[in-house]
Amino acid sequence: MDVILEEKMKKIFRGELKYSSSNLAFNMLISKMQKRVAANPESLDACIKDLEAFLAKYPIVAKVDLANIAAL
Image 1 (tube, rainbow, N blue to C red):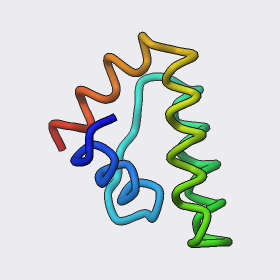
Image 2: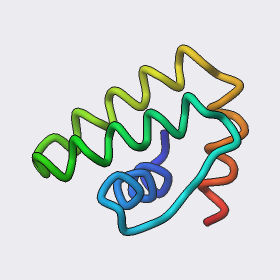
Image 3: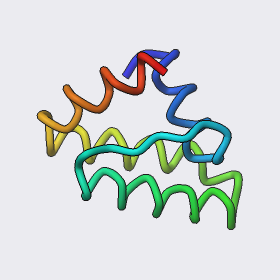
């Protein structure tokens, strides 16, 4: 994941940027990470690692949603 995309994902996890996917699993992951970061802001890097693991497991989600997030 490139630096710009990672920064946008961090903003989404912190609630500074709104994004909604057509994929329910990705939306659930975002919600889970937002709650995790709200409870412990220091967990942001761990959330990015979890996101990368999710995207590696589901490359089709990665292709579609990362392109949409990059366009934000």
